[in-house]
Every structure is written in structure tokens, then in C-alpha cells.
Length: 155
Image (cartoon, rainbow, N blue to C red; front, side):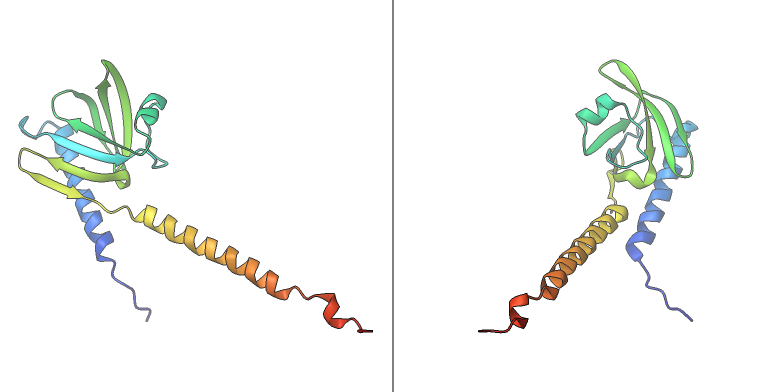
């Protein structure tokens, strides 16, 4: 029987993301008091984030949005949420995958969580491994080089 390593961090992240999904679902159905205010910070570099080019230019790494009074068309799916917000008096539609979220804060109840992005850690680990392999290949190639002078007869 194969034994598995328990990744508590990943399991906790999933549980927290499910809490955020539930809260946003309730918010989309107007089940939450207007006293609550939600600050959501997400990575704009996530491949499935959909925001305008203007917003990407203004927020190249991450972005914090506020869901309180002025938001429209909030909808929640298993993997993401969609919302329309106003930026400089212009409405913009945003699609944010849940695994792009890095912070969630509700100041009304002083509830704050910061999530770990496993995908980025995995990408960095893969990149390091690939770089090490490339360096080792170069090193091995240089070790295989044999000078012909070693085999020539000396006069």
C-alpha cells in the first residue's frame, strides 16, 4: 500500500477557499448584512484572471478589490467569481479564480486570512530543478571533453 504525505497547508487553503466561496455566494444572494465589507487581494498574473488591459497595466502583480456597496453582477462558480466594479467612474468586469486569491479581509468583524499560493511555489521549485539539470548537463559535457594532445606521440 502506497503511503501519502499529508499536505496540511494545501488542505487548510482549500477549506479557507471554501469559506470565501460560501461568503461570496451569500453576498451574491443578498444574505449578508450591508455592514460587512470584503477586501480581496488576488494575483493579477494568474493565467485565468480576466481583467482589462488598463487594470493589468495599473496592477501588474496583484490587486485588492472592495466588495461593499458599489459592485454589480456578482456571480460565483466552483472555480471563480465574476463581479463588475467601478474604476475611475468606468465599470469593469473582473473574473477571479479562487486559487488566485492571496488575502481576504472583513474589517467589520476583524477577520483576515492570508493564503499560500502553492502553484507559484511549485513553479519556482520546477524552475530551480530545471536550472540545476541544465548546469549538470553543461558540467558533464565539459568533463567529457578530452584533449587530443593526451594521445599524440611526443617527439
